[in-house]
Image 1 (tube, rainbow, N blue to C red):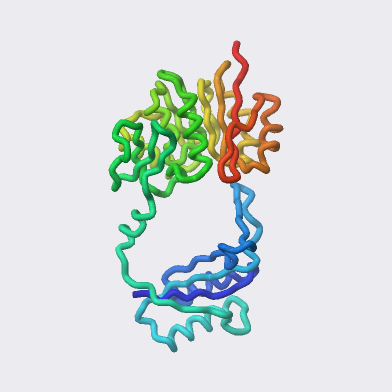
Image 2 (tube, helix red, strand yellow):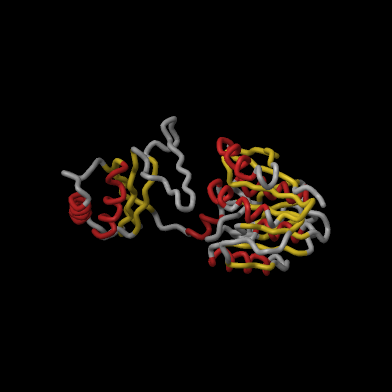
Length: 300
């Protein structure tokens, strides 16, 4: 058993309160939007080097304590944390008891097979494939981004299903879990290279490729290789897509195609403009506020 305590805090004190609660003896602490689920909910989008400048205006700090913690002891810990964080008194809070659970089973129950197209599914290892005749990619949620559930990943997977031809070459820039490269290989691509700046992502991609019995070339690098590819896909974020436009565009072979995602619909023109000197892009598809941009390098 555990005791979960939810405290109200404004953005300027939420992080300080979180740190103070850990120092006071909390087992874990998280910060969430206090207005989540209402019209006042505020989504935050952070990009490398451009993180949000503040948390939500109205935040809630959720701290988990040992279930044996007595009421007086808990009150003293909250008071100590509030004082250390600069509060005149303990902010409004609520408590609830969290029962012991099979957390692995609970987590797994939240992830079902994901249909990408009629011919492709993403299937967690603990599920049976809904369609044994489809391309079933076995992938579990993990540290690296890309399980098929996010709209940007789905947009890129759909593009690969429509674009990859037998034996073609594919570059997956910002490979994350390796899902796009694995999909390309399963669709018949002959040479697939995945690149990511995160070493953990490269390790995850390698493990996932082995699990799905496909061969990927993988590189831990910040810059694309000097090779060119018939298909290039980059599911990263707007700022790096703009900054890296010359480097990524140069990796598209003459006559080759490129798909970019990780771009909000409101940011599409920014990316299109950054790529204009190299490849003309257009919006190919949208999903839940995200857009996939597509283009083709002129042939020889």
